[in-house]
Image (cartoon, rainbow, N blue to C red; front, side, top):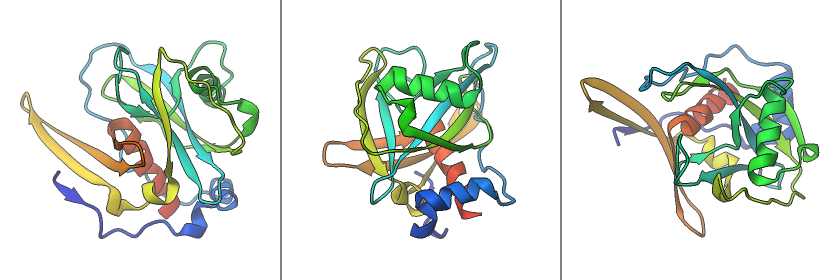
Length: 211
């Protein structure tokens, strides 16, 4: 770890409530995402993908995250938002994110209110990802697709939107300086290491809400 951003202010608790998030997307501030693209480590043609950032509307808003299975070809074993490639039959990124969330964890699209999208995030594995922000009614029941998802868990949005919990890392690898973020989180079952694209998109969400 190189540094921690405990000098930056956390997003105020009132700004993390569902109505405040809706209003932020209705009247967005002038802001810039902090992380646009990771360093590429593949020459393959870029693929458009979409993820759902599911904010569960509990008394304390929570973010639903998945632990990907270890055998997947891309981002195996990592913590991720539900999501995947945009198919030709998807009307838009939001439709793709809702479809993928239903396929991966059984989240009923009818329980999700899409309130907006963040700017695209380009991964080092050549995915152009549209992060779709959705407010999720808490009465959902999940059914995990064991071929793609090992586990699912929730993290308080307040924890994720506090940069004192954001870690900066860097490494010189094959003559290239690589930098990334992580957001470690321990729940009552495990130590969760949120990093890479998921942490980068959460950091951009923080910049959006804090602007």
